[in-house]
Length: 209
Ligand code: DGI
Ligand code: FE
Ligand code: FE
Image 1 (cartoon, rainbow, N blue to C red):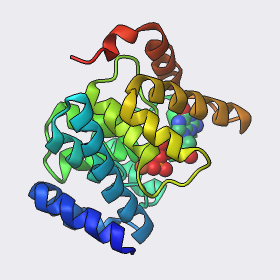
Image 2 (tube, rainbow, N blue to C red; image 1 turned 60 degrees about the vertical axis):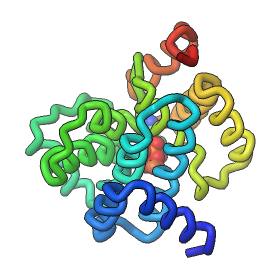
Image 3 (cartoon, rainbow, N blue to C red; image 1 turned 30 degrees about the vertical axis):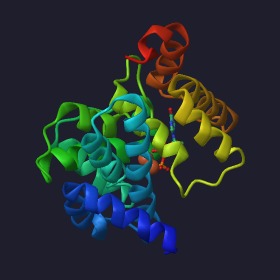
């Protein structure tokens, strides 16, 4: 872990003690890489939340928890999804990479006793998105693309864009995801397409209050 990572984590935990408590609870579930990513997403979510008028603590909590089930075996994830009474669609069943968003939400509800619907939704929808995403959901969706650990070509430009114009970052992120999936010939979740169309068709939802 680099010095920057450590400073980021300490600053985050000092500012949001509940985030530190959640981080300690989920750390045993996560690889070192995924833990670091989660801290970074929480930190980036706070930056975006400040910019876009979203509750900072909710952003930090959803950020630290968004991938909490990601490193668990798919069978384990399916079992918690089932126990929570969540029915998966055909596309959702077909893509194991989607399970962690649903199982993560279920874990937060059942094990961590989090009942804030906006926080739960921010995790549930962080991978696929949906039409009409709340400001908190948007912040988590984009912080996942622009956290400090991301290093894809163009990430710096995307990070700047996210901090300037969340809608245009959402268009780029959703467009990237849809193109990537089509390229790999894997099914695209209908909510992802609906999210893309909604962002394009409804700029009025993105006007800064
Ligand atoms: O968990 P992270 O890696 O931080 O990021 P994520 O939750 O956005 O997961 C991205 C993975 O999920 C990526 O490998 C592609 C996959 N994915 C995202 N949207 C869809 C999808 N897979 C399918 N089949 N359909 C989707 O709509
Ligand atoms: Fe994820
Ligand atoms: Fe993530």
